[in-house]
Amino acid sequence: MKLKVQTLDGKKAGNDIELSDDVFGLEPRADILHRVVTWQREKARGTARPTRERSDVARTGKKFGRQKGGGTARHGDRAAPIFIGGGKAHGARKRDFDPQLNKKVRALGLKMALSDKAKSDSIIILDTLEMKDAKTKALKDQAAGLGFGKRVLVIDGESVDAGFKKASANLFGINVMPAVGANVYDILRAETLVLTRAAVEKLEARFNG
Image (cartoon, rainbow, N blue to C red):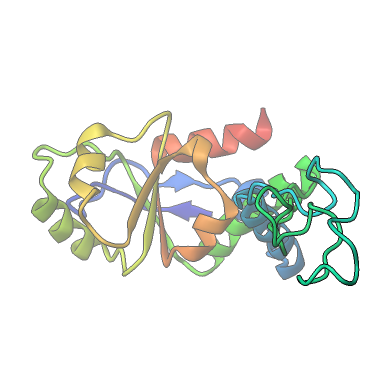
């Protein structure tokens, strides 16, 4: 698959780029994408610190007072939640959010996410993200001219250009990351996927190396 390479100003930049069919030409499968996104979101979840309940606190198990005749309410041991130093009633439990997914499935999911964007003509290739004047207003005009859409993911090569990153910081709907951070969830969420030449090289090398 060949795509036109543009500058940020919307002008043609050199020869077209050939995208590898092994990375951008697969048939997307909803079940694979669903498994990878679920795994990714589960890995991102935090868990509450577990509390000590009645059976966890270090207190005597002896009954507190007699059952009848004391003139007060009936009680068991001092570990009951009603007492100071007792266990927590209905406390937070430790939950396991560490699902497992094979590396091959995760890699396949990423290739399918990239292929899905290529299939729907939602990929824009830029020569570089370097800006003459790293201003938010200038980038906003350039993004509108290139047809970025409301939600766009911009992926650069080894690292994101500092000027572009600064200019895009205050623009709603533009997410930027280096190629190493490319992931299924962010790609599928984006309306448009913007890749630099360096990003394409990094992504293809990631699966071929």
